[in-house]
Image 1 (spheres, rainbow, N blue to C red):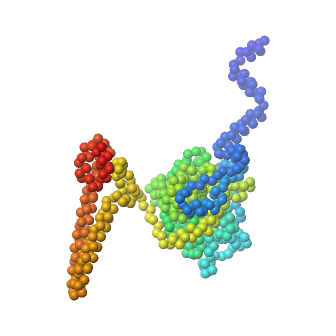
Image 2: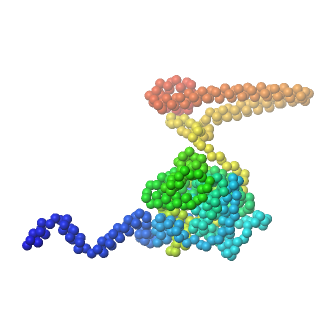
Length: 570
C-alpha cells in the first residue's frame, strides 16, 4: 500500500522517464539515425525521392534565346539533346554529391596529352596540352610541326579554358577532350599560368577577368592553322574569361563558335553567395586550399595566414595587388563577364545548373542573353557544378554531349558560312558607357517626354536642320544650273577668268549658306533651352504650367506640336 501511495504521489515527469526507460536502446539508435539522415538529406539538397516518384524521367532543359534570331532557331532545330531532358544519375541525386564525385573520383577516360609550351611577350609560360583523333584511336602521338601539310589542315580545333584551380588533368577536361577527339576534333587545353605543372616565369598572374592570354593564344593558333575553324569552351572562371573576351573583341575574334559552362557571370554576386551558407563556405575553403597550391613566387605577401580563410582574402592580398585594382569589389565588377554579354557576336551556348553550389542562379543574365541574337542559354534544375552526370554508371557528362552536338551542327550550318565571309570585313563595335551620353528627348502629344536613345529622331532639331539643308541645296543646284547655262559662252572665250569668277561665286554662296545654317542652329538651340526649362518647371511645379502657357505659345508656336497647345488651352 505504501508503494501505491508513492506511485500516486509521483510527478508526471517521473512517470514519463520511467516509461521511456522501458523502450529498448535500439529504438533510440534507429530514431537518431533517421533524424540524421533527414538532416543530411536536406543539408545536401538530395532529390532522390522526387526522382523516384517521377520514375527518373529527368528534368526538362529550359532554353532562353532571342525568338527572332534565325540562327538560334536553325541551330536548336537540329540539337535534340538541348531540346530533350536531362536525367540525373540515381545515386548522385544532389548537387553536392555530383560536385564532390567529380572532384574526387571523376571517372575520366584515359587521356595522354602532348604538351607544347607557349611563351608570351612578357616572359610568361602557358602549357598547351593537345589531344587528336589519332591519339585516342591509335594511342600514338602525331607531332605537330610547321610543315605545309599541317598548315593546310582543316580539322576543327577546340580550345578548352579550365576553371580557377583546374588544369588539363581535371576530370571534366578529360571527359570533354576525349569525347571531342574521338569524334575527329583536335583539342587543346590551355592551362592557366602557374598551373598544369608549369611554374610562373613572369610577374604576371591570371585572374577571372584577364583575357590577354586567351587573346594571344587564339591569335597564335589561328596563325598556325589558318584554314582550321576554331571553337572554344570555357568552364567556370574559364567561361567568364571566354565570354568577356568575346564581348571585348566582338566580330574581330577568329572563333566560329563557343560554349560557356557554369559561368559565374557576376563575380560580386557569387562572392556574396559562397559566404552565405555553411555548405557554400566549405566550397570557399576548398577553393582557397587549391589556390594556395599555385606558385606565387612573384608576390611578396605580408602574411600567409590571410590566404587560408577565403577566396576573397586571396583576391584581396594577391589578385587585387597584381591586377592593380583599388578594392576587391572593383576587381569583381570589372572582371565580370555579365558586362560584355550584349556585345558577343559569335554563336555562344551557355549551360548552367540552377542548383549549382558555386555559380548561383542569381547571377545568370537572363534578359541579356534573350536580347542577343547569338546566344543560347540552356538551364537545367539539376546538375551541380560542372558535373551533370548521367546514366547508371555515371560514365558520361550531359553537357559534354550537348556541346559536341551544338558544335557539330554549328560547323555545317549555312548561316555560319555566310557569317564567316562577312566576318573579315566587319568592325567590332567599341564598348562605350552610356552613363555620360544624354539621350535625345521627344515631346509627345500627351505631354510625355520620352527618351529616344542616343541617336536623333526624325523630330529632332538636327533633322530639321538637315531637311532645310536639303531644300537649300536643291535651290542652290537650280541656281547653279541656270548660271552654267548662261555662262557657257563666256567660259569658251575666257576660260581662266571664268573659272576664277566661278570659284569666287561658289565661295560666297558657301559662306552665305553656312552663315544661314549657323543662325538657324543658334535659334534652334535657344528654343531647345527654353523648352527644357519649361519641362523642368512644369514637372516640379505643375500649377505654374497655366501661367507659362500663354507666354510659351508665342515663342514655341513652330516648335511645339499644335495638338499639344490645343490640349493645354482646353
